[in-house]
Image (cartoon, rainbow, N blue to C red):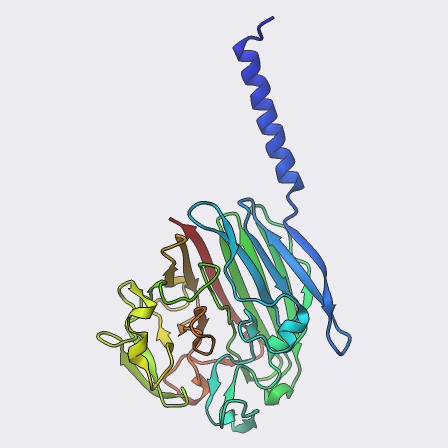
Length: 361
């Protein structure tokens, strides 16, 4: 007996709705497993975030490192687009491409010291005579704590916290820092930062992700656009002089989409590649800071941020195998009154957001 078309259609519709419901229920958006222990015995966790489109982000509690991000190309093939290590030991040995949270202060502080409210604080000189990336043991080498976050529709997230104690690496104040990683069904990775202190201090946070949108090779064929009209001039040690210079007509100008490798050789021998701080307009609003595209895979990454600048770094110590777009405040801001302040005071916590959107064409 032939089944009527209308009955077949109803059965198909019911099956579609049922299977879609089952998929929504069985999709495990957040998963946590053990990832090893530090030599001091601290347990390190691996958290996996998934979205409904097949994207996956992995974070470890050591350094709050973004260990992996699987993103599709124009043909729907997924590849990890971050430089990463396979084990906790790999990261602890100083893997120099880790997408870690950098703090208390990313980038450089001239002379490894600063004055705040009449008191001078001395830091570790771990970059020549200057301080860099929070000191000898910054946030990137500390074990963070996982805290619960409320479940929200169409996204998965994890919150990590770290208490940097008063005097740690020479910085004043107990600074409680939280970072929330969120993967949305719009193929966005959002990073929300917050840091509160019990006495005046300084803080400037970022994620030092090394992106390779092809999943291998170098970043020289990547096309980069940065909507910025000026940058912070710096000396030979990459310490800002305080001068704000225009980008137009310079080798650093990416106001028109440009292949990263087109002018990189012209920076040598003074520099082995790009390592420049680009000033963004738009104040505290979430604004477009950069667009990076990889022509062979079709992957595109758009970066939006509330921060006032983005540091372009082309993996110069890694033969340009990746590119960093570190949203941040200006380097050495504590020594330049004309730069946006990085001072954090009790009752006025630091709050910043960076949003990475992934496309494929």
